[in-house]
Image (cartoon, rainbow, N blue to C red):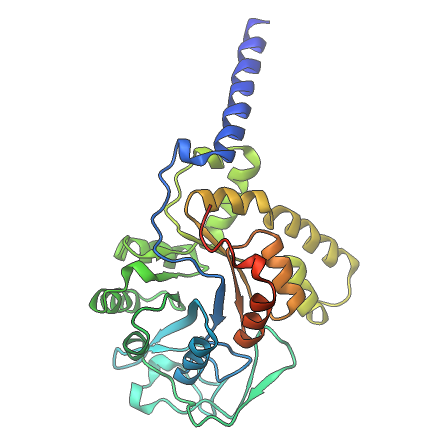
Length: 323
């Protein structure tokens, strides 16, 4: 009987303290000092409005008024850090093989029609002459004060080191976020340069959710500064044709959505200085759902469309700071 009473008292204290710290995490954790807050993030510079990951796309996104550029990095044969999502050339150029097999000056132009990954069946075809792969250094030079979100696409120590060195060279540690969905890559990024803002890997997202639903999250330190996740029901809607019309797919997506897309979670992270971005959202319905869920920002292929939405809905930009 005594043991049961002790266990009950311990459990009660645990639950109460967890709830208090979930609501007021600043009682235990120092708020992260992130130097920027982003509502409007241009995915690959805006893959629906320009050739993705090109200087033209980046310029257009900046002209529209984006808060952040999202881009991807690869390493060429001669050790140049190039901006590209795909490690192989087959998808978006007329050439074959991996980018790592080509010197930078040998890289071909992007083909005139390219698929938009998060708009299945849709391609971008523009009139721009800028279809080349830019260097990351060139991007830093052209947009020295703009926050940039870098996805390290390959598990390559040299790539990670060179990206870090470029960030240091251009004094961008305070306005650059990096990482990858793979935990091994993200851990290497953190080890290489712990002063840069860090993304949650997929593994760390799952661990965070486990901690959330066991009440441990309010007690746990988090080294990450940015949570980037997709909305499962939105992804299911986009890719349902690829998976078939099985009813239980929709049920699983709704369950995953209920577990992951939680305003209370995003608010807790916000109070700890951690920003939440939802990707890739390309319709007004998606934008509204993301901001209503408490996301700090939205990542889109259509920066003009998102800018128009934010201009028409100032309630989502009035509190342009973390809690």
